Image (cartoon, rainbow, N blue to C red; front, side, top):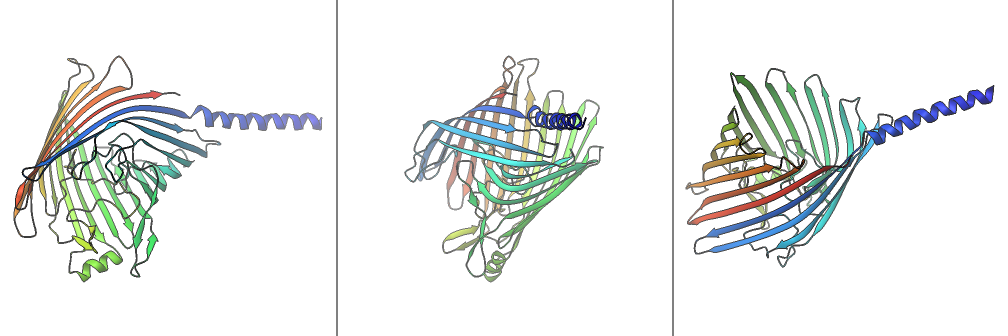
Length: 432
């Protein structure tokens, strides 16, 4: 009888363990993306230079995400590789940023990996540590080329009743065209280089009536602390969907950087803000945005190396950081975030469903001006055109053509004209 009871208990334990193991496997997914990315960039300034370079790569990207064992712990694994199909030598004025480039200007194939161990937070969020793609307002990764940038970090988020919060502790960064990871580091007042993580937290609240508020804060000691706030509202009037948004961000120097700026009688803070409105009518969309970076004297060079540029600081020290600028007029080539820059952007899009199923088009035009240190007003403008086609007959297959032309006035020189062309084909396969 005792043996029978033990056998029954063993069987129950085995069945429970098997069920949890099955959950780990059954809730897992494997996605493969084949991405073909061609990118050409040209830069021309009359009587000075006329340069052009291109890179062409075929990327294979595999993303595995497990379920949770015991509904507690799981893993994510990423494996990416970009094969060089073609490239011209990269010159001093152009770099498409698709493949790594050596000191001779030659491009090469490369790969990278990511991983994370993750913990389920009562089915309302996740906590994980590893190498991953981050998408938070003040520290994030870019996926605008063949392979994405990635970050080694601890990350957690939690969602409950319209409230979403997150936290990040990032120790290493990996740029889009880097295989390895570099530590985030700063220099202290004793000229010592220290490993210094970027810490960030924030959240948002959805009121359920179209109104959404969000805020984020980030800091890297001895370099900078930043915050960003934003409000968005969406509503429908008849058959028209309307939206509006406003944002405000500030970066302030911290620690040694603050002391350096103070010693050079430079401003220790810089701010930027923007507003936007949009409308969707049937298959057409329209948008208008205005952004401004407050005029400051914050540019700083130490021993010939630029520590803070004369534009709104977007990244962090070390880490091969690829954090992007948040502004509403940050488009294909320019962020329009120069010191004191005011920019107005117009956009229009159309979905051709019913005429050519899967085809959509979008156009953006941004014009701006800013003042140099000698008080001269300079102009910068850019237009973007984009065509995207999702092949109806083949699920997961898309092709996109993106073109940008940026014209920037130079102090005492001819305008610089940059043309940026991208052709991207993606095929996404859900293996399981």
